[in-house]
Image (cartoon, rainbow, N blue to C red):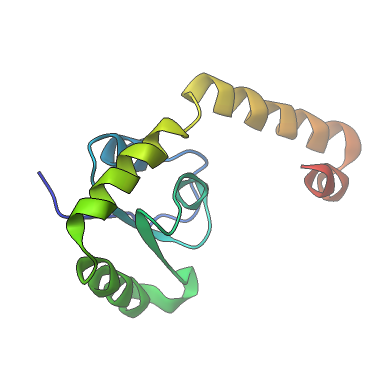
Length: 112
């Protein structure tokens, strides 16, 4: 049981731990970039500026803990239902890598 999950990694491509927390009804605090940021919305999470360090993360934790827990937990479960299956996520990621190799990184990212 947890009141909140702090996930501070901004460079991973998926976020299994965040997906599992959401499925358990645990709201999250995540950086404003990276795979974890893609899973969440304002109803179940707080984001922090990844360049702000531990102070920015701490402020986001306080913001989240000041919110009513019931709606946060319900929103977390709803957000978990929108998390793509790992296989689908990695299929899309590997397709992006293929486009980067074929078309050049800048062009492939433009199209993504």
